Length: 99
Image 1 (cartoon, helix red, strand yellow):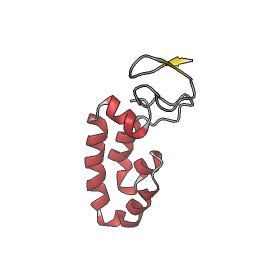
Image 2 (cartoon, one colour; image 1 turned 135 degrees about the vertical axis):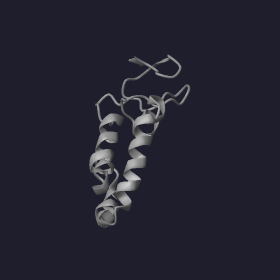
Image 3 (cartoon, helix red, strand yellow; image 1 turned 135 degrees about the horizontal axis):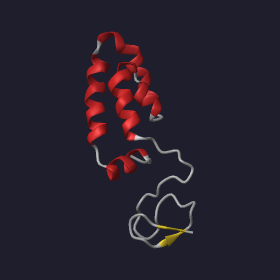
Image 4 (cartoon, helix red, strand yellow; image 1 turned 90 degrees about the vertical axis):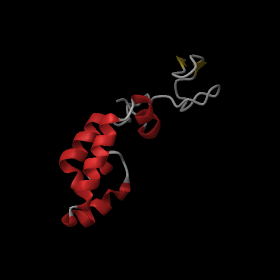
């Protein structure tokens, strides 16, 4: 048994979210994605969509298809900034991983 990250009540360690408050629990298997790694990948390799593949999003393929236009590079630069300045709780809710 573990304690909920949101309300502190006891719940089973395999629970994805708390039945009492609905707070999403951190993955015990360590499958969460690190926001610093995602931000650095977006900054340096974002034009190719590497950061989207790291996050498990299939639509990174569009970055590969249009990388020659440099539009994905501009988008990835903005995404890198957003990733790096996002709050830990916001990141964990969206991508389910540690900061």
